[in-house]
Amino acid sequence: MTVYDRLYSVGKRIRWTVIAAVIAFTVGASATFYWHVQVFGFLLAPAGDLLSPFEGGKPTYSAITDMFGSTLGLSIAGGKLSAFPVLVVGSVSLLRPMTPDSWWRFLVGYSLVSIAMFATGICFVYFVMMPVSLNFLLHFGTEIAIPVILLNNYMELLLSLFKWIGIVFLLPVAMNLAGKSGLLSYRKAKGVWRVALPTVAFFSAIISPGLDGLITVFVGVTMYSLYLVGLGSIWIADPHAGNFLWFWTFRRWGAWLIGRPAAGYYWLQVKMLTHGLWW
Image (cartoon, rainbow, N blue to C red; front, side, top):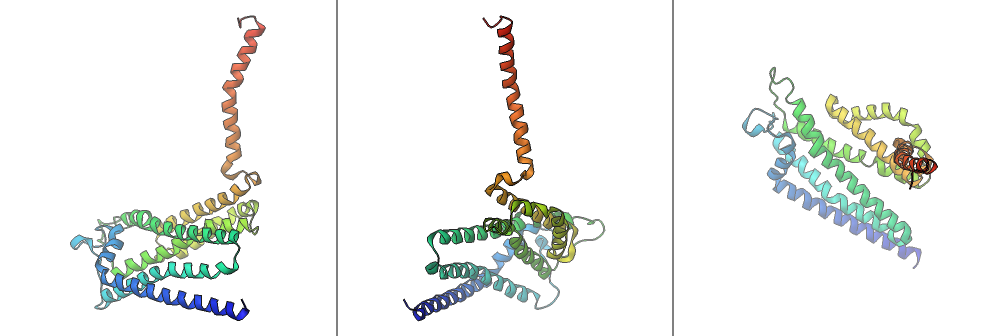
């Protein structure tokens, strides 16, 4: 196959990937717009009936076009979500002809793990972060004022957290990939833990919209926990490179505790033998 034929084949793959992504975006956006009532109901569920004192705790809007604008924005987000897997699969498939089988399995594996971690971050926001933080924030001070939350503010917060926390959940994957490629060792990754704390505080304040204290703490704890998970994934590849979460210390203690009864038993046997009591 000539260079021209290879370039033509790559260009053809790119064209079909773009076409498929546009179709997926159109279908996803159209379906989201058509079923926007159900989609809004699903996304508003973490807040329960806390967004307003009106019927069912529904959020409010203050401008005539806000409801329609929020629906369009949600439809675009649905289209992006539908097109994203198509773009990932198309981009990875472009590398298949020029990638050895071992590297291909490596690439596919990391792509699937990355998508799974991103989805896990979205689930964490939906099922843990939003319900807990909203339950606290919207109940705090209700004897003084009643919350009336605008729909566009809520959706902006939720979609922003979906995006950024999903990206944050890719941190262990990136650290593990850097460790496997030799760019990052366990000792180097562990050595930045003092810098990691202020860095996590800085980025969590940027990621959490409005700098709400509880959400910022949630983001910070999540980021630092994921840093530890990534550190552990590097350590597993070379367990003797360090004492991750005091693993070797606890192992020595466990061996000592398990060995104590055995040592006492053998000591008793020797004692009885030397005193003629064994028989």
